[in-house]
Amino acid sequence: MININLQIIEECKSTNSSLIKLANEGYPEGYSLLSINQTCGRGTRKKKWTSIPGNLFLSTLIRPNVEIIKLSQISIIFGLSLLQFIKSLGLNKKQIKIKWPNDILIESKKVSGILVERYEKFCVIGVGLNINSHPGEYTSGINSTCLSNHINTSELKLSILSTQLLEFFYKNYNIWLSNFLNPFLNQINSNLAFLNKKINFNHGKMIKSGKIIGINSDGNLKILLNDNNYLYLTSSETILKTGNICS
Image 1: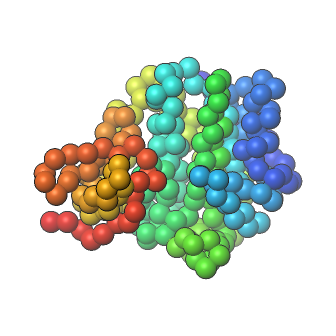
Image 2: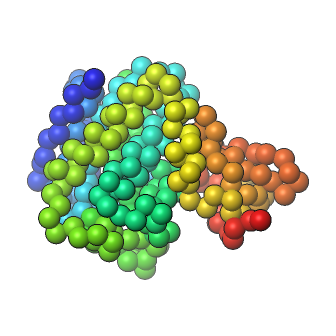
Image 3: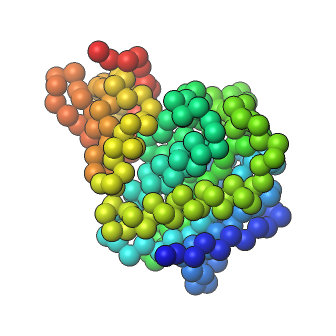
């Protein structure tokens, strides 16, 4: 089993950046940083993550000894772990979905962001979770929410929440190291946002549309095209928009 070692710091620019430095110094798998304040949080594709004090800013270090091609699945496993953790807090389970590959939506609004940064000998996984507040759509360009809109968060402590989330993740991570995504496929697909809905996406130089069927054992998104053939998306960046439920 991997020992979870959670360190709490008052402030940093980015928990991921801070933990990457420690990883390069040889810190062990399971070492994690929780920052009370984060001044320059980072999201995917070099976007800024708006870090409002009172929310959760957490990063953890892993050193998976697996084929490089499998490492893209890490973000999916962490997304599932985050879904399981949020459900454990007492939210209406039907309201919570995974937007492939790892965004968590509550009533179709984004409540979290995950950034996985991979290096030759380690990966650092960062998560921002909106606990008590969230940025406005005008500021962030994203329709977002926070846990306090759905449950009472007044008694929640960031350190306890972080430990609980890490326990969900490392339990799943240990299973993933031996079996990869196969044990998780049914649970992921049953909680997938926009399942059986039409999406438009970039494919080469063309815009195509099709229906989301689920993910496969490689973590790719399976799409049923209008001509009844299947296509697999490897990156969420190709998705342009989602549509209505398909019959």
